[in-house]
Length: 149
Image (cartoon, rainbow, N blue to C red; front, side, top):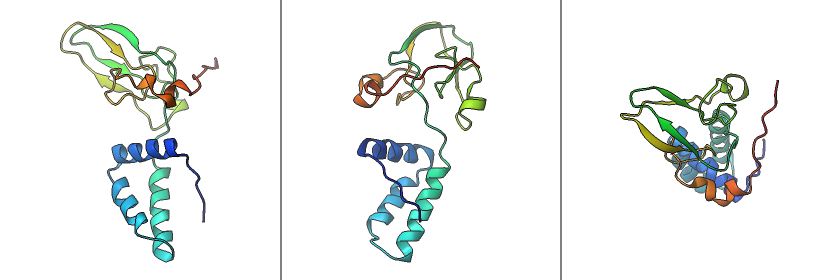
C-alpha cells in the first residue's frame, strides 16, 4: 500500500482542487474520517488515490503580479492556465507538451476594456486577478523559469 505525506497547505490546495475537479472529495473525506482500519479503509484510500491520480497537473507560476491588458470587445482570447506559455498571460500552446491535461481558458469580452489578468495562475476568478498572488503560498513559491528548447 502506498503512503502519501502532504503538508497542511498542500492538503488544503489538493482538497480545493478535488472539489473543483470532481465534487467527490468531500464525500470521500467524510467516509475516510469514519474509518480507522481494515479492508474498508484500504478500499477508501485506494479510491482517493485513484481520484488524485486523475487530476490535471498544477500550473507553474510565471509571474507574481497580474498583467494589465487592453482587450477588444468581441475578440476571442485564450488565457494560459498552465503557466508555461512564453506569451503570458495568453496561451501559446505550451500546455500540449509541458502540462497535458491543462487547457487554456477561452473568453470573449463584451466590450473594449482594460483588465488585470492573473499572472500566478491560482486566481479563484479566472482569468482575472483576485489578489491571490499576495498570499504566502505564492509569495514564497519559486517563479517558473522558461527553458529555451
